[in-house]
Image 1 (spheres, rainbow, N blue to C red):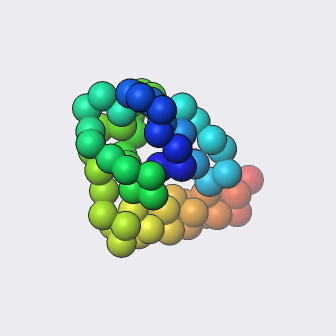
Image 2: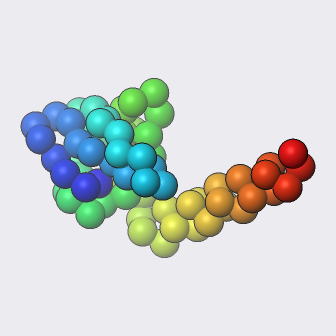
Length: 67
C-alpha cells in the first residue's frame, strides 16, 4: 500500500498505480493486500506477497516466450 486516503488507497501493481477500496480491510502504508475487482479483500504477509509476485513474473516470462 503506497498511500491511504480515507476508505481508498493506492496500490502499486508492478509499476501501475491503482486506486482501490479499503473498506473491507484494516491496513497501513507499506502493507501488502490481495485485490479483486478494485477492492482490497485481504491483508497479506510480506513473504507470501513476494512469493506471489515472483510466480506472476515467471508466468509472464513464460507467456512472452510462447509468442
